Amino acid sequence: MALDNIVTVVGQLTADPELRHTKKNIPVASFSVAHNDRIFDKESEEWVDGEPTFVRASYWREPGENFAESHGKGDRVILVGKLKQNDFTDKDGNERSTLELIVEEAGPSNKFATTTATRRKGNGNRSSSKAAPKAKASASVKAGADDSGSDDDFDF
Image (cartoon, rainbow, N blue to C red):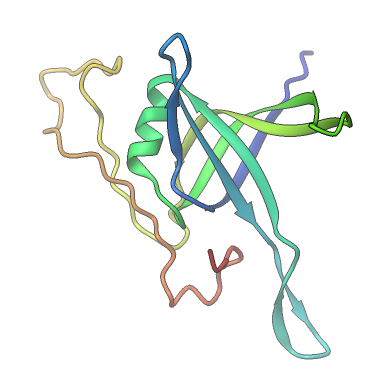
C-alpha cells in the first residue's frame, strides 16, 4: 500500500491570489486560506470563534492562472494538494521551517454561495459536437453578511 500526502483544506481566501511567473515563465498563483471552527459555549449560550488557522498555498501552471482569474479575497474555496516543507535560514541566521500546500485541485465551495463552472478553450478540454455553449469563466463565492452560521467569518 502506498501512502500519499494528500490534504484537503476548506477556507476563505485572505487576499486576492498573486499570479507571478518563474524565470522559465511558468505561472504560479500564491495565496493563503484561513479557517476557524465555531463552537457553541454552553455557559454563555453563544457561538464562539476558535483560533484561525492560516495555510499558504501555491497553484502552478494554467490551473493556477484559472484560479487567480476566478477567485478573490473572501471567496470560500476547497483545495486538495500535498504539503511541502520548506527549510531556510532567516536574516538573523536562525534555521526556520514552513509548510506550504502545493495545490493539485481547487474549486469554489457551494456551502454559502452558488457558482458557475465554465470550460476554457485550449486547456486540454476536448469539445464534442454536443458540447454546451461557452461562457465567461465565473466562480465568485463571496461570503455574505447573512452567513451567520458560517464557520469561516473573518474581517479581512
